[in-house]
Amino acid sequence: MQRSYVIKPELGKEYARVSHGKGIYLYDVSGKRYIDGSSGAVTASIGHGIEEIADVMREQALKVSFAYRSHFSSDAVEELGAKLADWAPGELNWSFFVNSGSEATETAQKIAIQYWQEKGRPTKTRMISRWMSYHGITMGALSMSGHVLRRKRFVPLLADYPVISPPYPYRRPEGMSLEDYAMHCAGELETAILRIGPDQIAAFIAEPVIGASGGAVVPPDGYFQRIREICDRYDVLFIADEVMTGIGRTGAKFGVDHWGVKPDLMTLGKGMSAGYTPMAATMATDELIDTITRGSGLIMAGHTYSANPQSAAVSLAVLRYVEAHNLVEKAAVQGAYLQKKLQELADESPIIGEARGLGLLCGLEFVKDKQTKEPFPLSMGVAARVIAKAFESGLLVYPASGGLDGVAGDAIIISPPLTITTEEIDELMDLLKKAVQQVQEEVR
Ligand code: PLP
Image 1 (cartoon, rainbow, N blue to C red):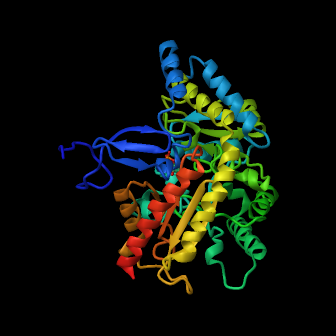
Image 2: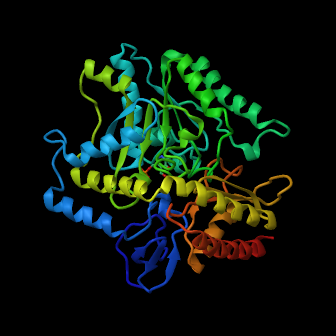
């Protein structure tokens, strides 16, 4: 193994070196093949090595890669903005381009606060979010995130925002119907707004399906409709964080489309450029942008690389690819098949408490006791063991641990590229089953 001079998350660990990728597969420099069963970090959603995307990259680079956004717009940026406005629900007609999901959620936070200032309501500055959520790693984004593991070292630096419980159907109070549970969880938002005072609250932020801190936790029907009503009642903006769920991942263009809910702000990342370039966006409604335009006329956010023509051209090519290959519809169909296979695995495994998911955003939660739902001690790292075994046999899956310490910290995400075929899902499942079986022998 060659010595590495790169700072990596786990220092001292030896990392395989990636060589190349094709379709759902990645290869390391030794020639070993891996199924990219999680699209990396739920990102490479159209698969690897697509020539037409590479062609667009080259063409745009030869035209112009970078022009500063205060000097120029570009065809690529304008066409990307128009396409997103066409795809997005409601009046979300404006896009502010950034480079990562964290920047997108932090920009949404800033636009929400600025909107209320421009409306003459400057006390509305606080955000409400949920435990078991992840909105990004930078301080503003982390302030809104209920990911215990990622927060805890930095708590003194984080904004003191109120948090409410997310709907977590698998662990809902015994005997409570899903309908009642949806109202119960949404009701927590109303309670929090009333306790703190609507004049303090700028926005509520939520992931349509909980990703990194829960493992594809899908809310019950009715939850987001109720959230929308409560936000409207108290003049609180609703930010849908679609960084993980957006652009077809759940079998609809956006997660909120499953419930017909129209957010005031929406954040995108990951699948928006499918890993071909860093690219993310904060989308806002006409009402928000018109108010700021009539007021100061300047959105107080932005980064050097915001709205660069190179990334915009690549992202536009990715969205066109998604459309041309009907990947949103395919995610729904293949997602149903993958979920069925995961359920079969859960039924036969003594350590899988729940298989869940929406479209091709799927999760498995590991438990010590299926009857009582008692989790394994976090120190046993059961999800991490499954991930390691899967990696050894050539399957990549994504950790979704660290949400609520000790209560629900043991899940993985399975989210292959939306292009995956039925045969490839069978191949993925063979490897996953093997990994789960190996771990269940170790821990039982
Ligand atoms: N929001 C959600 C829902 C995410 O899942 C993530 C990343 O996992 C982020 C925001 C942060 O995105 P990034 O890692 O690109 O900064």
